[in-house]
Picture 1 (cartoon, one colour):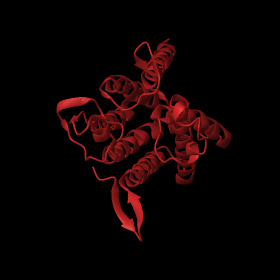
Picture 2 (cartoon, rainbow, N blue to C red):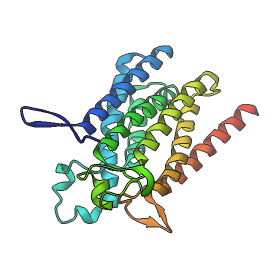
Picture 3 (cartoon, rainbow, N blue to C red):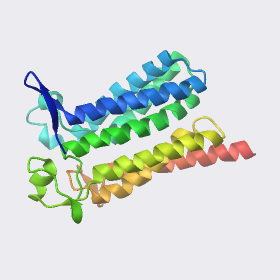
Picture 4 (tube, rainbow, N blue to C red):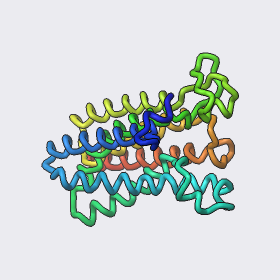
Length: 252
């Protein structure tokens, strides 16, 4: 729970940024390692991961601005210069589309790369969520047996020092478990792309229920369902439909 890890000549190095960098490094390491097993060049893996990272950051920011437009409409420069504010699903959707187009442009094997990126993304995201925990953002609702964040953390400012659900840690642990499931599932996968679809389904299901514990600003709601929950429902539905359709075509 230390927002600033250390300073270099008076310039603060934020713990959030460190965990983001560590998460990307871990994801890249896993992706390159799995890529070698599928005879995909490390340079190609690196290019795809870089495109996924950059477009993920852009997409995450765009969705946050969209759902929190009231915070930005009177000062448009804050869209660029404010450091806070990303929605993971915005990054996931935008990055998936952009990475798909990039893979097609490079004439690489889409299904194999998707299955390589899925566990890498799960591990990197798990580490990145520890950055949220250190920052005190993405916090949960008050909980008697929860964690008490420092006074300067958004969680404590919002609830005046009341213990809350450490939803960041819940998600970090869930993603680590998903990473393990995906790595094991790779050994018995029956078609390219299945691992990526399993990742989408598992994460979206977890995220849907974890959203009920979140207490930070969730943007607008639709019949009591948050934006992230709506996206979760769509992703789970589409992923399961594709999995069943491909399984059916394989067995016929």
